[in-house]
Length: 216
Image 1 (spheres, helix red, strand yellow):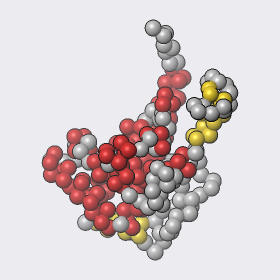
Image 2 (cartoon, one colour):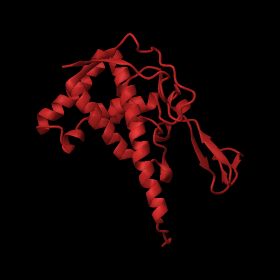
Image 3 (cartoon, one colour):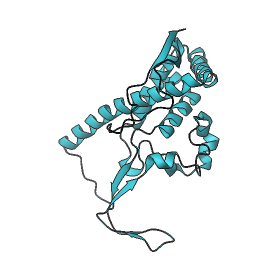
Image 4 (tube, one colour):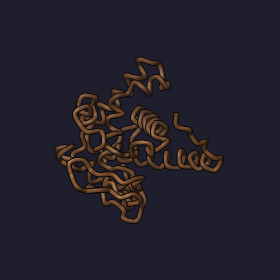
């Protein structure tokens, strides 16, 4: 058995801080981009709303169980995270020398690697017509056809974002309540296409993201 090291109080506090801070930022960003895309496609927005209303009808209200029964909402969130990943790149440090399979390239210990998340998410080899917003890319059947490492909104492996499920649940709950009670369309101030701010640490629309909201 390999002995495990306990986390220090400082490490636990740091993880808790990242858990909540990064969770709120990524969730709000994912919801914003999702509503932006749905505002442009009434058919997809209606399908997402029907998913929410069907879950409410089945479970009686927006319970935890109802939230787990919204497959299409998850597909919309994942497609938003694909097209607009919160972090455009990930960095990792090589822990030991590693020879890449089928090559003579050796990654040396201590080297810093940059994983181009945005580029992977927009690679037509994995996502045909990558600029198109298509939640059906994330049906269980379509996901099973792809290499799982071409979708990295939260990272992967032992360093994956600790608040992954927390962040997804926040986005799911937020979208469910908003789609149940409101409709979203583009306004005169909505930029199409979006202009991404080069100064923000996360993928953010320059000048904000404006939508027209109407009570149902």
